[in-house]
Length: 557
Image (cartoon, rainbow, N blue to C red):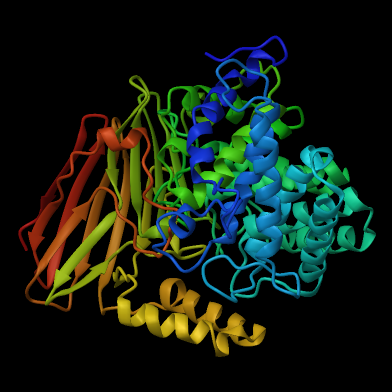
């Protein structure tokens, strides 16, 4: 384990995880001093040349690079390495070259000009600049300052319109506040308050902050980080209180096996960003308990972390581990909901039902059609998982896994059963094709250059990939019941088809979400088999998801 006289033992797990990725981070950077893309972290663009787009968000890696340069722990190959200072300068310089004249940055395609890329990159570049500014020559310091303020001014004039994504809005608030304090620009602080207020106006009475209208544990942990950063810089007590309420909610979705989230949440994410909980630990017993428990999960690589992510989440997660190590302090542990005496908890707005028994901990996602996960507390493992039903009919695929806020579900008076009506939707896994890519790129490089048209394109894409739904004429009633050793399921289905197959699937996603289906410790518990039955006009399915596993049967109708 990495230890240092200059670093507290509490940071050791985070430091080790960061140092383990040092060579990967450096390998992504274009370190050729004569290259036109010198300083780019988009290796698929500058090295492989498989992409025409440099993905500006990859420049977020400049913060981890700067932090590794200063991280005095054993086995850190980049500590005080002379070349790193030059690399940081190149990476900052390249970031400034990707900025549009109006201050905006792109994320997924040329001329997108989006709040997310402008906020995220501005946040990490601002923190990297604060750490590395003494290394830079005066002209580069001036370019970075001008680009940060220009990005802040663009955020002052623009907003996210295609949905409420609290992690994006929190990044905007944190980025603006960072730049405002670095360069004494009060107007940016005023705009940061706008983004903060927009998040808090959509905070549920249950504590969670909105991600496309619902609660998501993975992105929730990222929201906690950016808002905690904003709170620490601004001293805003309202933000602190909102974060405490959010941590009180999120603690229910830390599982006994050290994993979080999943298909029961609004965006299906399973990763965990630790820094916000470390920063909030002294203010919130829930945050302290989460941070303490998840330190062990990170050390044992149980949770989805930087080791199991692709490059689109690698940079922000690596940065987050750096911030977590810097914030980590002594924690006395703390009790999470799964450690407590048996209880039932129904979050009606989020559509989440938590059942805690002596032998198991279960979470049901009524908001996602009644998904169920059962964890064996004695062995700290996932025992049974059910992500929903899938019907394959005449070459088309439909599913019961669909997101609804505040689903119409009824908890019994004794708290031991949950009954719901489940809407179905078509399940289509869209991918980019060569003709579609050519048409899309031609559009973004011509008409899509106009900001108003670019925003319209984003709205169309969100509709096509996320919000627009085609529904079959399926009637489905699902009842979940508490069993001594798990959760029972009874499905009553009326189907409009007379052929095809219905399957009960352990894990899948029915939405477009690039950050879903990463891996964590639960993967080892899946058996990969899906129970299936021939389609009939009426089907009654029964299941027991217990500490012994999952079993399914069908009634003869």
